[in-house]
Image (cartoon, rainbow, N blue to C red; front, side, top):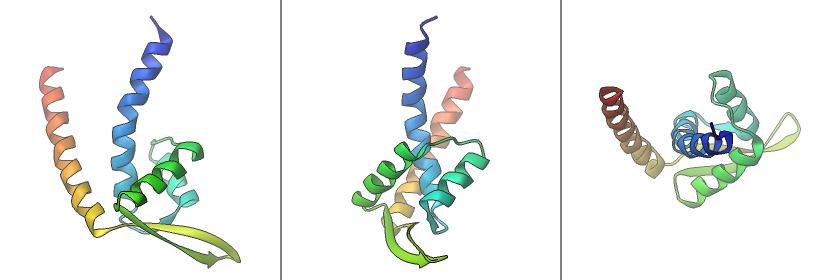
Length: 107
């Protein structure tokens, strides 16, 4: 078995569900570290080098809003879902459920 091929396909599969997981988690405002930690706790492993660029991209697409605030004497950037982000997340969840249902039927 070609392990590189498997890893590449696995990464492609993960990209889509990571976006959904991040959008769903920031329905409640969080900063990067707590977001990463809460995702890891439920089995969605994502490293900082993937998470922070994703957060910036989702914000530039208008799906997230962020603001810098001081907490525990440190500046932290807090992210939350925008109104457009909520709409897109709901659409993605419907699509995810349809895809999952189809795949379950095939498998």
